Figure 1 (cartoon, one colour):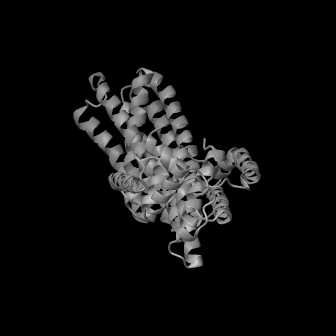
Figure 2 (figure 1 turned 30 degrees about the horizontal axis):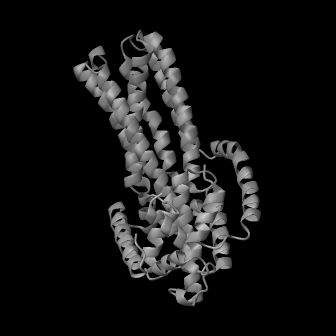
Amino acid sequence: MLDLQEQYDKIYRYCYFKLYDRNLAEDITQETFLKYYEHYSFNNENTALKHLYTIARNLCIDEFRRTKTESIDESTVELPYENDVTDKLAIKNAIRRLNDDEKELLLLRYVNELNVGSIGEMLGISRFATMRKIKVAVKRFKEELRKEDMHE
Amino acid sequence: MSDLKKKLQMGFDAPAPIRKEEFLEHLNISENANKSNLEGFLFSQIGYISKSAWVFSLLSLIVAMLGIRYSDQHMIWIISGMTPLLALSIATESSRSERYGMAELEATTKHSLASVVLARLFIISIADLVAMLVITLIGYKAIGRTAVPTMLYVITPFLISVFLELYSVRKLRGRQSFYACIAISFLVSLSIYFIEFEFKTLYKPEFISAWVAAAILALIGVMVQGRKIIKNTEEIVVWNWL
């Protein structure tokens, strides 16, 4: 059975780091759940997660198209927790320098803890390709951390 | 937790959502309403299963019963060969929406096409299993065999047919799959009659392990094909959102 409290936070976080807008991210999170329950009355957890992320991703893409902004310039976005400790700021800076695909993969795999198979299905790529892309993203993240003078 | 994971979780730290509790409370009410409607949904689907599927299942059952009543004691193959015809109702029902070009339309309704197909297959499978159980219970005494082999002889051709028919439903389009299902049922049925008529070895006790193996393989095949069909119908829904 899907833990709605947990999945709400995860989908919201996923949308937030695509849109960098708190209210918009929450609107899209709620729309994602409503669209999901409109079409599925009962389902298993893995299928549900795959569909939830697919809907959320498509809604975020629609939002990009609507505002005619392909990629938001994050340097102009005010991140709410910028006044945290230096390490946190360094990590955020390192993440900021990654490209959108790398950020998406790292968030899905290590923060939202989605399995490799589900990520691959959602992005329409094979399991092997997903693993390879995650490995590249991790390597890039570590390189960026080193530039920030942080050891991995 | 690995250091990398900790750092990433620290980096991807979003501000807390504001309207979460209120929204989830509303969502839970809707979800509970859906759950209480599950039984009603299953019963409502009984009415939508085509009458020909019921009639065909009933006819197969009657013919099998007549076979038990009037055939020779050792003629288990008559009953065994009838069960592939029961499988036809499952295969034809699983492809009905697709056959009439209604799959995408049905996928946009309140209950997804996957849940509708799943519910109907569940109902027909239960009905067919009850029919086979009746055949076994009446048959094993009349034919003079023990219950387990009789059950195997009844259920294995049925499972093989369901497997082949679900495969053809997945691979072929429109009415082609319907005709393929009819051909498969008759082919499996006639193969059993032919092998038994020609060689008279199929129902000998030394072949029981082969029957067990065939039943297990066919059951795995049915589950794999069933899963793929449901997955395909779910993908129609996802495709509609793209």
